[in-house]
Amino acid sequence: MELKDLNTKFIGKNVIYFQSIGSTQEFAKNLKEEIQEGTVILADIQTSGVGTNDRKWFTGKEENLTMTYILYPNCNINKLSRLTILIAECMVKSIKKLYGYDLEIKKPNDIIYNNRKLAGILTETKVEGEIVKKLYIGIGFNLNQTVFPEELKEIASSLKIEFGIEFSREEIMKEFFTIFEEEYLKLIN
Image 1: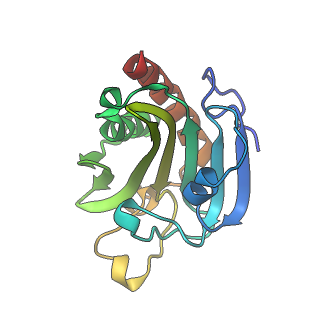
Image 2: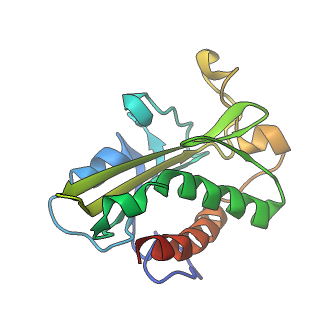
């Protein structure tokens, strides 16, 4: 899969796509060979998605944005202290710019609307000393899902449930990667 007309230097230029996978995050972390920086592992369905504190992340069938992307910041870990909140801010900006909707951030890693979770962010690092060599950034974003398991109905939602329209996964990814890459490069330099 390719993201056409992508306006970034490296994030999203290489996409490894799966119709179904256990976890994009686990796949990324278990890659044996070095992979191009900014590579995105994207799946329509995750069967064992992970969130923060090893919680499960439920994904509907081909209705959501489920991805992990890999970066090689090669910088001191202290520079990345705001990273997760920065990712959330960039995603919120992307939705505002594309669709005009104001979403909220529940610190440190959730995007919410009407007190219901729309998206979660999972950042994991590979560190040598105090230098971050690899970043694995996982994002699960409920876009067009309209049915949730009973135990999630009160706490989870999707953009489609909240705003009543279909959302484009590719459009959101392209906008997000453009906004995030610029902020990320400022952060690590």
